[in-house]
Length: 507
Image 1 (cartoon, helix red, strand yellow):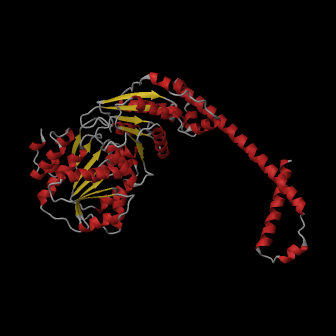
Image 2: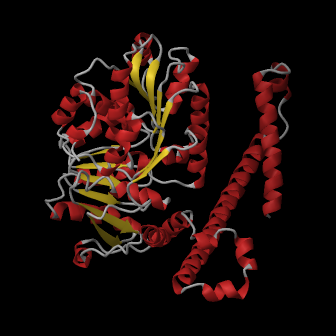
Image 3: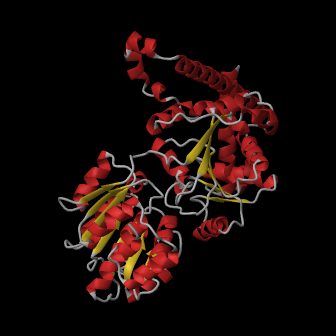
């Protein structure tokens, strides 16, 4: 099937040709005819399958067919998304598809001033793309109402659940009119998402599932490097320096501080890069994303805020600098490459304390990730010996899942001990050694504090004896009761008594 065969109006067909679409993707081919008939839809598809066009084109077609006009402070189609970047991307797609029509679009999200957003909503819009928090904020300010919504789209529903938007979504759904067309898209379908879909969709929605849940795209070639945490930066720098074909690279890490640290390491090596995470302002995030799309920078370092919905063409490589805690996030990360029928490479680093996550990812994806070129380890600096402080820092990290809930594990008996493999035993030994080192270090610090306190007590006692415990009468008479000098004298006397008591305990 070709887009020309779909029952779309001439302005939309012209926009599709301008964008460069010829053949619809599976989810577009299965969704568009049903949506044009006004049916509710439950779509399950992994990232990069063309979901945006699957719901945008039918909505625009039905808006054109209705012949209605927008009213002030209202919208006719509401698309709810979890992140600002995804909202901006979806709005850009709507603008591309509606460029030869009079349909208006607007995008509202947090992190920026709401003045311009209010000014746009006063005139009313046909299509409103929004994040839940800012939408509820503007509704509370009476800048927009949802009474005229004809089409409601909830995209990336499982991501909404992960980010804690479930209560906001229920508030928004409660404000929508009863007669509307609902579209529900999610990459995965756990029980919580199924329950949410049941409250939004009609009794018999059209179900479209174009790929197995949480399965990586087969065109992605994966590599794995086992490396300690301290040398991850050196490994990343070496791989980027020795492979010129890595022209457009996404690097995912777990923390905001870690993203900034990676940028500093790469900048020292002369590699153009930028970071994008929650602590960056919206303007800085958009600037970094724009420079990455325009290939002004080679590497974009991101936390999982960019794992979904960031549609950047021609990403050649994706690095998992830190393996994600949630195994399904791994699928969305590597899905940033090999889009639109192209091939890509996903490279993962695995530290010793991430082995449990690696096993979970391979079990979920049913893919054994092959190891990369081992000769590159010879080019890296030697592994540093762990200090007491570094062992304590690592001990504060994640424990293997089998170690959580100590009481339950102790009650599991000898049977569970027999089932434990050698890797789990090594994990337990490593944790016990780190715990012992932690207690030794705490005892050492406590001894140092006690010694300092005893020395300070001796000094205070000598100072009190030199001045004399009895204050001369002239000084007392000169200061009125309640004055600041009198208060200071009382504090000095109390400190001297406390020092004497502490010194007696130490002796």
